[in-house]
Length: 154
Image 1 (cartoon, rainbow, N blue to C red):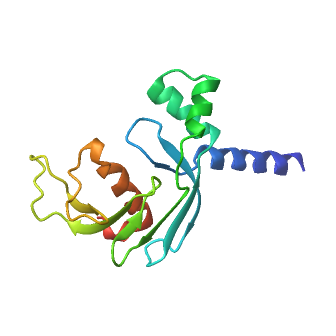
Image 2: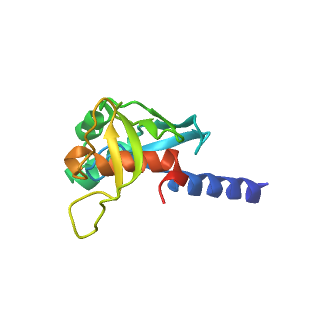
């Protein structure tokens, strides 16, 4: 009986240690833990996340470089939408920051030696594509879209 309990405990610990995360910002440690995925790759793809104490601690350790109770508490107060969704057919999706985007596909003008993006992402309500800078949020938004619609981004 003890062997079964020990194995169960070890499996639980290894699952928790390998929990999937998604970045909500471009700084080190700005991540949330994935709690549930549904309909990935479909017209109703959804991912539910949770901003955990472990996530906040990672941010304080990796970006702030000082883990304190205040840093953790402040990080846990960051307002996020804890559910993201996409219509993988149209490419429209929402991010953890509540922003709406549309994935338009590969950038025909992409050149890895130039300062442009491999894929075109447009903020809903505008016609201007994100420029790929960390300030534009391109990498974070693209990673969230990849998690929702992995077959659209090769």
